Image 1: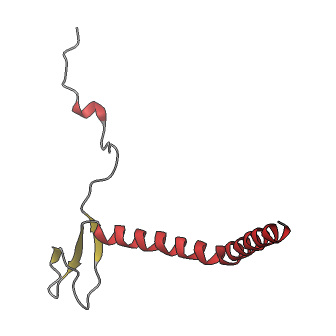
Image 2: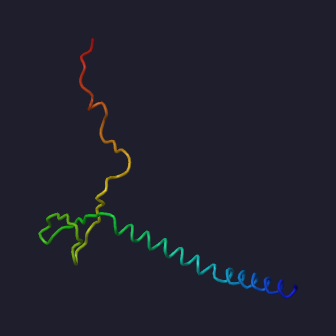
Image 3: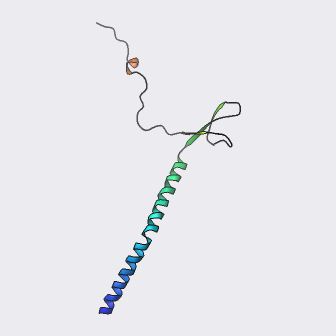
Length: 97
């Protein structure tokens, strides 16, 4: 019976040692998966490219130009509500009594 317990204990110690020595590899793999998922999510977002051609005319296209500087413009609106201007300018004029 002691031999059986020795085998079970040896297997448990071996499994624990394997788990302990490979935990950094698993953590590294998890971080890599998360990083790759973030890159893929960013690449999947719809985007436009704003740039100027040789004549200085503003161009907005779905593909980035080759050999030119460009700016990425998100196609999705900003989250939340944007308020611009003075609220009193939007109110109708009411005569004073």
